Image (cartoon, helix red, strand yellow):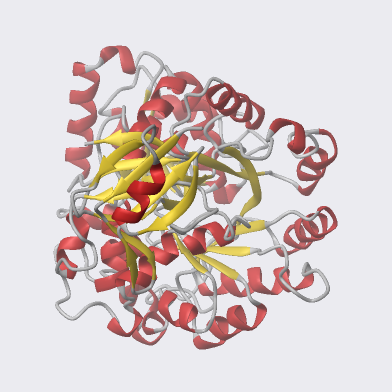
Length: 542
């Protein structure tokens, strides 16, 4: 029997309750208590780890990210933070010169944001990207991953005006009606799938490297939307992760969020595919699990594609872009209900969230949300939407780190009144809604501590504004940690075995370099782990 004792620590058990030591046996917490008592209980064969008085919290569980895109992004041109289109071009040119082996199939990168451009807020187009290369395809994805710019070479390969997969809303045109190199939502996804095939390189090793980074930041579990996304073919993603975890190389717990283009594809998987073989392929206790159906109802606020009831300030006729239609959503809900499958739906604009909630209600079992359907993001809301989410017991997956950018644009896009009731995750939590946290990495870094800082202070990473952005929505540190641990476990039906440091729960824990409960709130974002444990195994020490 493998035993490990963490002692001489400040162990966070639950709100306001701390102990000193944790005894782990075969990957499960067997006792929590005083160091002296557990040292005697551990026995001479136990591995002893002196925490040196440091704070120990449960492992942090990111409820929405895209690990494969993050793995790719770490080895691409780093365009996030570019302050102009000219700088975008320069970064990509230099990357191609310094890493010619990485652009033999084309150049793919993500992270630009026109709101960060200091000279002009226009979007880059094909003529701009042609300055990077006209010989190989180039695709630069906006930070939100809902709009992309491509060069003329890739436009020619895509043939957007003839390919039946593209509708007119999937691409932009110039004054002559010709494709201008901007791709939206579905169009961007199609192009990214092609570019991934051309530039994939060593995907498996990139994923393992990305996992190393995640555990170094205290992430012990993730809910990741890779299967059925634009990165690789759905079954190829499933097979790749089975290979990683069957070989014992997975560093943390991974839960699939799975996309399907049509209800028929979803139904086929339930009857003949991965879901039909779930018990066989994902045995109990595995670190790899098959999770919910993932849908997209709209786009993003920064891209002006979030679905808005009254449009955008200064552009009232722009109501955003709808992803899955109401009719398809009803069909997905019906299939999920019949097969007992949880649903997670991307909803950012107020109109998209309103429609998601309405569709979910039609798919409840015996009038209740027993399948724990969830709204992912849940950003732009009014009082009516917030009240309805609470009444229907719908879960919410929030990304407080989004405020680092969104607080600077929200009022300009949706107005003060609507902004004041948006990003209202504390209101939801106080109303009894199960709110869990994630980062949507690589839209943001998967580091949990800036995310927790943002939830606690409602300030951007530069400390603005001094009192916090609509500070009535700030939460305390305990609430933020619970949202990252116990509430994240609740989302995956594991709240009785995960997300707490107590006997019978899995031994997923993080030892912090600084005490998150006593540092100044502005310093939370700078905290880093010194040790991360998953299932009783130390997967990071620093």
